[in-house]
Length: 276
Image (cartoon, rainbow, N blue to C red; front, side, top):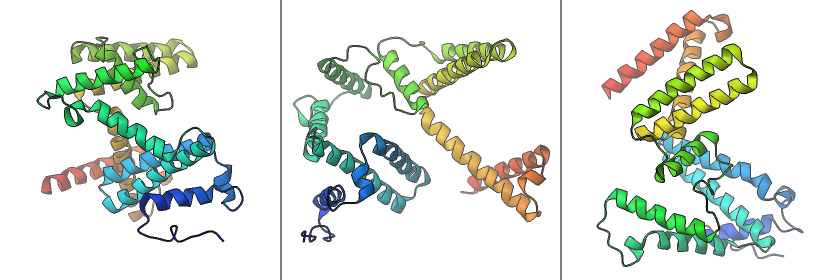
């Protein structure tokens, strides 16, 4: 019989979690589902858990955040266990790598460099260190290393930020706004005269420039869109609630009525915000 004392020890800390994962992946006595998983099959769950962490933060739900952070930590432990089984890396090597990276990237905290720097200078130093790291990995191009698997809007922002650091950027926001006008006109032309592929291409170009506008405004586009999604969900739920009070469903209503209810929900939110 295996010794389960650590697994059932509430004070077992990270060692307890590592042992739980090792046991789940045991080919003889583990969980069949967990045994079947690999890096690729687990990756979507890793992404999902990261977004659930962000969602809990957005809602200010701190007990929920505690649980979601645990779920995200489990993803790291899961990948590390798969890596250990394949002889690629271990949890300890993962911890060592990120610890070494943080020390190397903060010489003004853990080294002999002065902390008396502006935020801009610290950012420049950070990028210089990261550039040296990319060079060691034979990543020579400015845009190399921006993960392809990122959400497209987030990746667009990261690509533009990288390009801007080497001078490929508009000097002010006016150029970005002009580009949005240009791309919107090209999208309208594609809609009226061109095929579906060109419409998709021009729509993508417009989204890409909108992400750049967010960077110039100091707005994280992924966060802004997530908040807009939350607001839309909240207000549409209000429409449904108000319709239900009238014995109706959205499909029993029309656009004019639902638009009026939307505006009423919007005014209620403004009034509540002013009272806080």
